[in-house]
Length: 450
Ligand SMILES: *Cc1c(COP(=O)(O)O)cnc(C)c1O
Image (cartoon, rainbow, N blue to C red; front, side, top):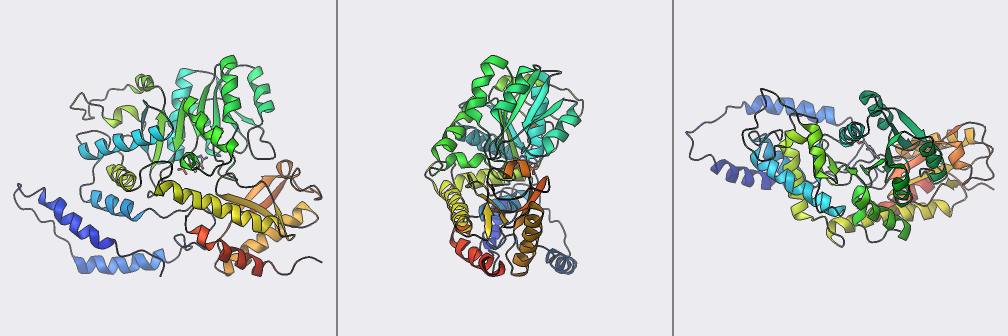
């Protein structure tokens, strides 16, 4: 058994209660043909079988985390109403829940005031941040590290902003020297600082970048789509703690509740520290339906219609698991971090493998030892396939030889990029399973070299 099925019973009760709210209206009963639905659902189950086992702890590849049961239930319940958080007229209750949940995320980052909302994901959230940044610094460059999410370059293209890539160091962090050289050339409007790169979970040196702001007057946008929630964790390295605390001084931040925040896909969040950026969004259209003076979320977003259900699910999750340091939610993140550190130690102590840096968050990256980089890539791909056959699902990551050479001194780098294994231990259950994961890896890796 892998799927949690008990909690679905609560949905029926909750639906009955929700339905009572409509009692004053004349009776109206939508018709459904349950037999026809059953036949289609059977086919849906068949189709859905063609997936990797994402909810199981032996799926330890990409950043896939099942939504919390309370998020699933609250989302489903909201679908019977299907509110639209574009305007209060389409989703009064769910808009209020969104404002509350988003304010709690702002508080998590140490912001007493903010402007922000949910959106469909990290990409759209970053698009919005870079759109606002471009409006405030028209014609100026946007910088991000070579390990930043690939969408930043594309977003900049869409917006017509000039984009420049800044080199990353051996730890996968933006190189301050390279940044400083770009800043010195002038015309930089925005620096994108990634806190938790998607590949290796590295954090760019935000405090040092903030120190450069006084001299060069750029905006700082923090892309913490994957890493943001780790600010709640008490077991971070001192340096990592200092980096997260510096988010307070950034201009905007993105976090994805659909990555570490236990939400179904379709839930990203953008926050601006200065609420005055709202003036940039002003638009008028004859057909939107802003009928009150209260803030309609569609007045401060790029998207029009948005699922109120996402806000309902996030609100419910944060009611059950408040975004507090020392709480259950943060303890679960600590488990992911501990799982990554445990797996890393196993790999580090074993001469069949080549590790990269110690995980800062919950991603572990390593290769299979060989003389030449091209052989490392080949052996690594073989191991990826053998592990999958043994039901252990990992991910692959290409890293530049430039970044790896400091970690792997004896290797002959005959190619520019090396294929590595990558494991996101994003589920708290991964901590209990990391010895099993290691056992499978040990078995499928074959004997130690002589
Ligand atoms: C996942 C991710 C994104 C993109 O977010 P989506 O929700 O997939 O659109 C952007 N930046 C970082 C650092 C990410 O990890």
